[in-house]
Structure formats: structure tokens, C-alpha cells
Length: 347
Image 1 (cartoon, rainbow, N blue to C red):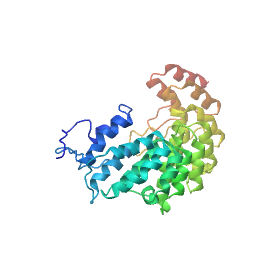
Image 2: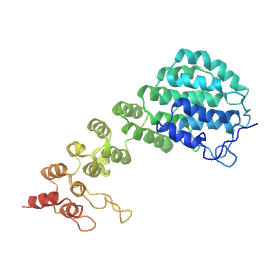
Image 3: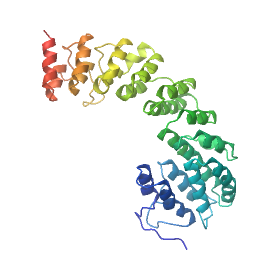
Image 4: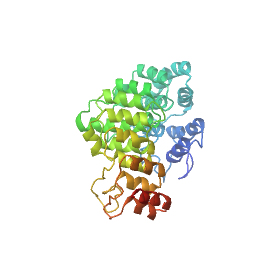
């Protein structure tokens, strides 16, 4: 007799996914919440068994068991929990002992491959290349799971981008991450991974170098994203991989002036014009429309950026599409000291 779990109970997949990702519940508690679904827990009025999870790698893989056409409800999920906890804790000897027996048992329930995919996701989330290497030796066609492309959700890609790790990425790429994709679709995937690399806590350049070896083309979008938040070494690498023409077609300097002052000098030294103007507006609220880096720095009230741009020859007379000068923008945003400094520079 399936256990009735009311709608909104914390054991439902979405709430457990959010709580686990925020660190509000432990992995042990999370598994206690979600694994009972494999033994018959149902939400009659909820989306637990109807709506598929599109985020949180572990929830996607575990919930996917419920959608398998040959899924047979389990009497007990203790062995699955034990295996997944061993994976999470990095107890490789325990994993090697438990995985063959547990996965073999799950074959009869139609979900061995789903739980195997959960193991792959845990290896990525926990940045454990040794565990991943072991999983890749198991006979469950890991390459097919790794290379799944849209519109099919790919929990492994979600897991690897949530916690970027150089060794993990190399193993996944070697084992089919890029699949047989070519042309625009391949570039989209590479761009998506590059954005993750740019936002990573460490090894940004190394991650980007690996992607470049597999055909990553540095796009305007990547330059713009990097200019907002990345470090000088990462931006220096990106600049080295594109032409001045490509660089000037981007809004990298405008973004840096607004959000990331430490990149301004690097971009100017790379050849970008100190008076580069933003793209023509696609809508009347596009802040880049006809603005210059000086406009953006002034609007943010960044005196150091303003001084640097003026010292490098920025024009204080330039007006944006609303006929505003940089000093005007500073003033209307409450940065009177910056506005006064720019106006004094006119003399």
C-alpha cells in the first residue's frame, strides 16, 4: 500500500532539491526524503510523479526512475542510499564493493542506469575524478548519458557546471561530453561551458584553454560576460584569442567601465578605443545606446575609473542618445563629486 504524502510535504522532490542545494538539509536527509518515492510514496494531488524536475542533478536522476516504462517499485531503498552516501563521502572501496551488487539488483526494477547516472552526477558535484574514473569502467554506457543534448535534460552537465573542476571536465570531454555535435550547436555548448568557466572560483584560464582546444570561438557575448566580473588573467587570455576587430565589436570596455574597473587598462592596452560607443538601441531602455565608457563609469560614481578614462583620452563632450554627457549622467545618479571632477577636466 503506497504511503500517502500530502502536497507540499518537505519530502517532495522540488522542496528537497531546493533545501539540499541551499545546505538546509544534509545529503542523508535529502536521500531520506526522495528515495521513498521508489518504494511507492506518492503525491496524489502534486506534481511529484507528473512534472519532471528540470534542475538539481540528483533530483533529476532519482526522479527519472519513476518515468521508466519498466520501473518496478522496490520494497526497500536502503542499499541505494548506502551506495549513494558512499559515493558522496568518497569512500571508493565501499563504492567498489556496493555498486556491482546494488546496480545488478536494480536491473530487475528497470532503474540501474538511472542510479548509475546519479553516481556520475555525485562524482561531478563532489569534484571526485577518482570516483568518476571508476564509474566510467562500469558497463552502463556512460558516454551516451554524458552526451545527451537538448531538448533532453542532461543532469551530468548540470552537475559539472554547478561545481567546475578541470579533471572532471577533461574526463567528461574525453568520454563524449561534446558528442557528435558540430557547427552552431557545438559552439552553443562550448559557449555555455565557457561562461561557467569564466564564473568559476578557480582555474578559469585552464578551463578555457581546454575548451579552446576543442574548438571554442571567443564570441562577443563571452567577452561581455567576462568584462563584468572576471579577473585580469582570464580577460587577458580571452583577448589573446580574438582579433582587435572582434574585440571592438564587443561591449567589453563599456561593461568593464560600469562593473569591473580593474579590466579597463587591460582592454585599452589591447587596442580598444577609449571612446567606444555602445550598440544602437534595440529598445529605449538599452543603457549601452550611444554611451561611452566614461558615461558608464560616471553613472556608477566610480571616480577611479573616471580618472583613468580621462587620463587615457576619454572625451567629456560625447553625448549619449538622450543628449546627456558623462557629467550629466553622474549628476542625475547622485554622484555630484564625479560630475564636478569631469566638468573641471573640461578646462
